[in-house]
Image 1: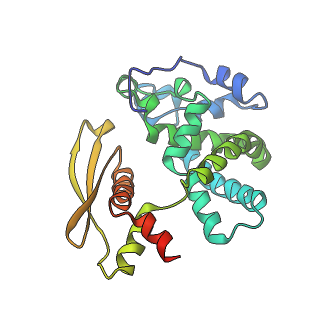
Image 2 (image 1 turned 90 degrees about the vertical axis):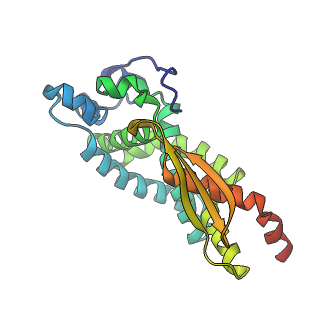
Image 3 (image 1 turned 90 degrees about the horizontal axis):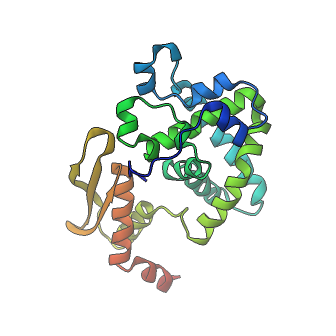
Length: 245
């Protein structure tokens, strides 16, 4: 996803609205949602970046996704609903939504950010997607957001359930460690590399002082999660959990 060579076709806010949001009435609002602060630094006439809309969109997504899950899975307990919502609004998942709808080509980035492949970076894609959600909410209220995102939620939720993507490997590893008399797992950053806009982190997880898994990711959070998942695999925790049920 961080490959700067995978460059999407450039698209104007108006073209994006025609393709994805035919009911959108305020194209200037959508344009603001697509404007990264790096673009604003080079184009002061743009007036405002998308950070306030991102804040709003984040809150709107939490509510819309929570309400959708509540109605979609009437028998699902609260804990599972919480995990499903976390999986659906996670940075990587929202970035995937942005890629699905081809949002990268419409993002307004500064020259340096664009040359570095910002249109493929999960963090920027996620932030822009949230800002677009905020713009849709202001333009057409909650119903417009529901109409826009429900098809994406349907497909993603099925994938999350089938592939157990709602499970938190860090929590599972900690429960296993404590259940077997070990202290809580410790995560240490082994290394970080790359420029500030595109870093890679390598993280080890130690159980009882021994390295049990290593993860690599574009954020410490992603690397930590991968390290925990690797530790679960290495320690055969899934088999242990099955045997004690």
